[in-house]
Length: 237
Ligand code: PXP
Figure 1 (cartoon, rainbow, N blue to C red):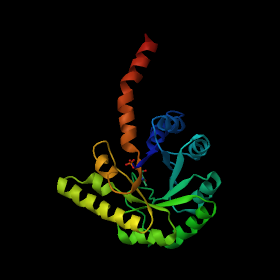
Figure 2 (cartoon, rainbow, N blue to C red):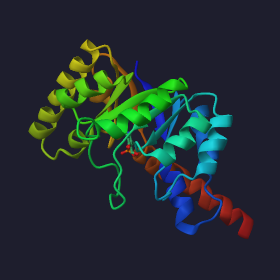
Figure 3 (cartoon, protein in one colour):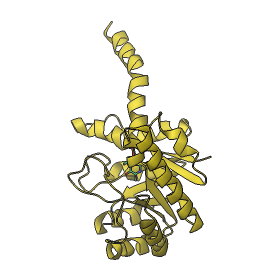
Figure 4 (cartoon, helix red, strand yellow):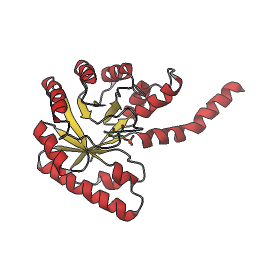
């Protein structure tokens, strides 16, 4: 059965909307763990739009499950990762203007930068996963570079409008997954997975970890909203 890494970035997005102290992603990480999460995933972006360094440090100290830090192969954030030592780093591309991680990492085009970053992470025993499109060339490059895992980008599958389109994207993930496993890589998948589209992905042979954020945070707001209003009503009355 695939493990679930719960991405808590968007709890921090709500907090940062007011630059206040709530909701605290540290609480969300603890609750995710209580709910059965196998890992906590968080992305420390260069622009600090959601997760802050403080969140990462406290979660690393308090989580009893694996902490998976998503980050760009950038010297500054690498220094932080080396200090905090999450169990796993997932290298992702990062553009300031993007709403979310829009495509997989181009491991081939950025090989020099990635290699420098990876060597430092591997030296201190941090496992590295590469967030790549379901493209055999990128998977092969990740393997050569020394990655332990690849996280295949499921965004195109998630965004597919027609059933045919979804089938095509699913087939691409299936064969890229097979390719990765044949090369001895651990198979992760993530991005855009929801309560509606996850089951097919979870059945991909050999899939080890799914990283899911937005849909879980969205559902949490909805399933908790009624109770939150009721509690405020009680206080007022
Ligand atoms: N995996 C990676 C590498 C990501 O960058 C993200 C988004 O931060 C996710 C998984 C989670 O995607 P979503 O929030 O759409 O579930």
